[in-house]
Length: 147
Image (cartoon, rainbow, N blue to C red):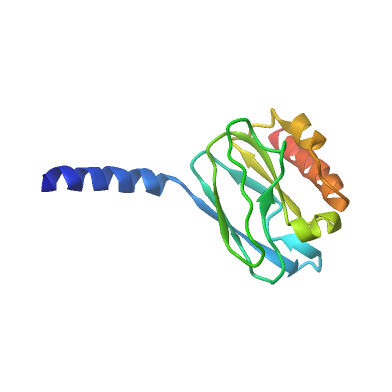
């Protein structure tokens, strides 16, 4: 029995080590002087990766946007001033906002597997203020990076 448990543990450990953890800070201001931003706004990931949003500055959260994530991907909603982890299960685009600051442009775009097939759905999702324009620009940047 002990040998079987050890083998299962080793298999589980090797699978877990294949995934990356991407840390994204929630900031009032970045080094370039931009206000109310995520430290990474265009996040490249693969299925199995974990995106960890860190409340570096106060009064921020990270959450997905209804209609702006791939089919089958679970949504998430972090609490204000709390770390939240988001495990990637599907390829495609996911829009992420800080609810209190999306109108100021505090948004990010997760691109999984280089798959941009749900770009139109993301563009049609309910995003407000400068956040909508920034998501559009991030999708265009992701497209340009594929060329």
